[in-house]
Image (cartoon, rainbow, N blue to C red; front, side):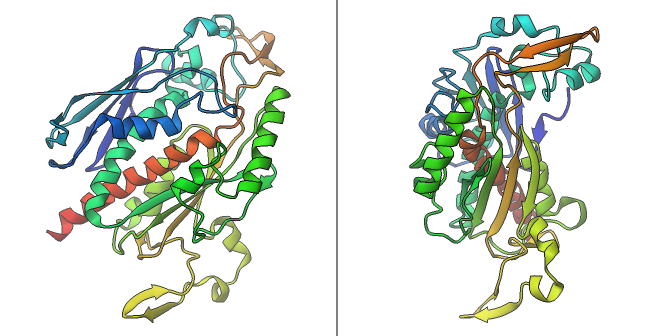
Length: 362
């Protein structure tokens, strides 16, 4: 299997399955001299781990990391950093009864067609457990970005099912502290309560929900990104579409921008206290595939969780009709746990483009 490495200069490689021994990650291209303590990674993983509230999977994982290379006395050496997070609550036997059927909207069928076999227990590499590697990479990416200035990346749940809050990317409530104050990870308390109630009700019905995450990267300098195939918005789309359950990514005005005319949509430039800026930000901080110094604004659409506790039609591997009811420990809505993963992938993209920018300006 290829496709397990992301990035050009800052490279993140992940390995491991949902119900295997653990999830591993190798980080290449990390500059020497960065402070890195396992407790910082553990704190980030705690925002992603299962069992953190009654809204997510009850799987019991502490998700503590082991750094086994690339760091000495709490400082990066410039050599590859290796990190392992062991699975403590894996239960592959829970999937024995469904090994012979294709789960609706899962990767069982497509993986089998590609590789001739599949890890039925928890989805294997298709499981969101793999995203541990992204969060580890995000911690190191943010340390790299700290050398580029006061860059801040914040994501929040904007919509769950039919309930949404149109929070502005410039809203002062859009901080990690405010987002994490509610288990749904929506910073608008009254809307977050409604979202939480909807998730609980849907779980009791045996069903699942999708939604939208809003992400903002602030204080990114102008000039990052490469034209044509390596546009920074193209790289962001690649990174975010690589996340499980993602079905849509829009930057700036996105699909809504098609309803505007050019005279309404264009971001007019102006000189504001000696700094050239745009009066509006419908471009989402990116023009021509290169950052323009405004906030990078991204929205990511997540589909409803595929595993549900309702019987559905399917077929066996022999093509015979079958009925399947999802079992195991699954999120009724992936969005609360996806927020730190989205932040991590954006940080990984920006760190990689920052290192590329340094390479051409030396």
